[in-house]
Every structure is written in structure tokens, then in C-alpha cells.
Amino acid sequence: MIPSLKTLITIPAAALLCAAAAAQTPPALLHTENGRPVRSARQWERQRRPEILRMLSTEVYGVAPDTRAEARYETIEEGIALGGTATRRQVRITLRAAGMERSADMLLYIPVGAEEPVPVIFGLNFNGNHATTSDPAVIVAGKSGSPERAPRGGNARRWPYAEAVARGYAVATICKDDFYPDRRDGYEQSVLPMLYAGSGIPDSVRMKAVGAWSWGISRAIDCLETMPEIDTRRIMVIGHSRLGKTSLWAAATDRRIAVAVSNDSGSTGAALARGKQGETVEKINASFPYWFTDNYKRYNGREEQMPFDQHMLLALVAPRPLYVASASRDDWADPRNEMRAAQMCGAVYSLYGLRPLTWQEDGLPAVNTPFIGGDVAYHLREGGHDIVLYDWERFMDFADKYFR
Ligand code: GCU
Image (cartoon, rainbow, N blue to C red):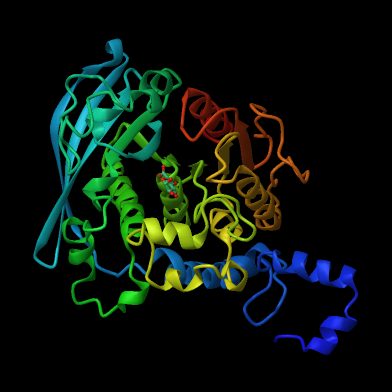
């Protein structure tokens, strides 16, 4: 309701300031839609969590159809790699539904000589498997697979396979574009036409690229489940930036993911939208209209009216361990709002008797000071928008707490 001129005049300035601050307060995590307080993990699971999941599906990431794509897995290459410390495997995943077919190529490095199945780190990549490593045996494939567009090893810095394998982790990756080419006209080549065929789901709530990528992560996990060397009860899914948004939604929708990592995911990822610096809802929808639902555009410039905010996305990961990482010069993503959401989602972890983020101050912590003592972790790496060895090492330190 808009206050009348008279009430505006009579409201003391302090009260107005208070109202402005209240307007920036994200919607309550622990109140149901009909206003009842949520006091137990059971109530969260049975009532509040499904409400939030539904809301974030219809308003932001998209409603997934029930369609079950038939999957076929074919090992197209296997060999010894990383100086004899790992088996490299390349698997083509072919998915079929509604008479259509799409394929995605997974690259894995699996530590050799492990006595039992190993934990796995899965992450989608930006520019093709061949761009994640200079290993010449990695096939240049996938829809982004042209060496001109993405040179071999061009993103290798972001994929410290040898270090992860040395710590006992298998690492697996697929190019995001295999599930949805990351461009405005990517729809036809994406997995969505085969998934939505005949579904009757209205256009306004359909998944787009980020939904399709998250769905792809679940299909990658299906495939990992067929590999005896991999322990799929110990899966950590990581993602940087747009793929951090994606890893969070994947963890929200697929409970096989045991640990979730968001690196510099920013807008519509880990960062609260209210009071956000850098990229706003309107900006992300303008640059990337094909990432989120059509419904999400209704909130352009209207963050204050959203019945949700990103702390809710993080809360959907509970009770599974969650790591939110930011970088000190990444104003576009907004480290402060990423950290605040990570702090706020702790209320749900507490319901499970788990530990929220141990950094609970107002301002950001010092750079390169990881807070991994709780079940929600956070660090602010010094530097810009990127994912580097420092980040990976902290994520593995955190995963070690649960996987060892
Ligand atoms: C753009 C976009 C961000 C995204 C980033 C990335 O900067 O605005 O939302 O996270 O790309 O994926 O690197």
C-alpha cells in the first residue's frame, strides 16, 4: 500500500530509514507461505523446502518435465594419463526422448591404484573438454568443439586435474554447450525440445540454459553411477560463475550431490538480489534472456517485490555441505551479497543441528582467509573473477572433512 501524503509527513525520519532497511530484507526463510513459523528440520523438509523449490522453479530456473531420456554410454577413449597417476576416460552419453537424440561427451581422470571407489568432483566446463587440459589425447568435440574458438588447454589453469588426482579425487567434466549451446539461438540444439515435447508445461515457466545445464549435471551423475571406480555417495559439484549458478540449482534439485560449490556465481547464483552491486536482475535478463524462465523477467527492476531471494537457493542445499566462494575484485558478482546469503542460509542448517558459516560479522572477512569450520563455508580470494588452484584447494580441504 502506498502511504498517503499525510502519513508520510507524520512518519519520523528514523522510521522511514527503518522502512528502507526493511525493504532490503530478503523474505523469511523460516515462515511458510501461510505465515507459520518453521521450527524443525521435519517441517522444513515437508513444507517449507517444497514451497521454495516450487517458487524458484516457476519464477527463476524452470520447471523440469517428467520426461525420462533414455541414456546410452559408450567409452570412446581410455588411457593412462597425468604421468601415470590417472586413468583418462572419455565417454559419450547419448540421450533419447520423443524421437530426438542429443549427446554429451564426458572427460574423466580417475586416480590409479585406489583400493576402494573414489570420491568425484564434477563440474561443467565453458569451452570444451579439450580446453580444460593440454593432454593431447582429449578429443576436440562437443558443440563448442572447434580449436579456433577454444584452443586446446586454453582453460587448463582452471582445471588442476593432477592436484585433485594426487589428493585422491576423480574429476569429471562436460562442456555446458552439449546440453544447451550458450547463445541466444541455442534452444534448437539443446536438450529442451526433446524434454518438453508434449509436456504441456507453459512457456513462461520452462527451463532455459541454466535449467538445461543443471539437468545435464544430473545426467552426468547417472553415468558416473555406472562406474565401479567412482563412489557416487561422495560427489562434489563445483561451478564457476554462470556454472556456479548452475551447480547450486543442480544441488537444489538433485540430492545425490553431496557437497555443492559455487565460485563467483553472483547474480541469480549465491548473491542476494536485494541491494546488489554490479549485475542486477534486469541486467542479467537483458544480456542473457535465454538463461532463466520468461517469468523471471517480471522482476526486472523489482527485486524488492520478489517473494524469494538467493539465500533460499542456498538453503535448498541443506543439510548437505555448501561452499560459497568470492573474489575480492569481482564487484559484478558482489562478494558482500554472496557472503550475506551464505550467512543467512545457516538458519536452515541450524534446524538440522549443523553449523552455519562461522563468519557472522557484517563486513567481508580478510582475503585468503577461508572459513571452512562450519557446514557452510566461505572464502574471499584475493583477485578477480576466476577459479584458480587456490579455490580448488580450499574446496578439496572442505570436502575432505566429509569424504575422508
Ligand atoms: C557474465 C554474466 C554473469 C556470469 C559471467 C560468467 O559476466 O553477467 O552473470 O556469471 O558472465 O559466467 O563468467
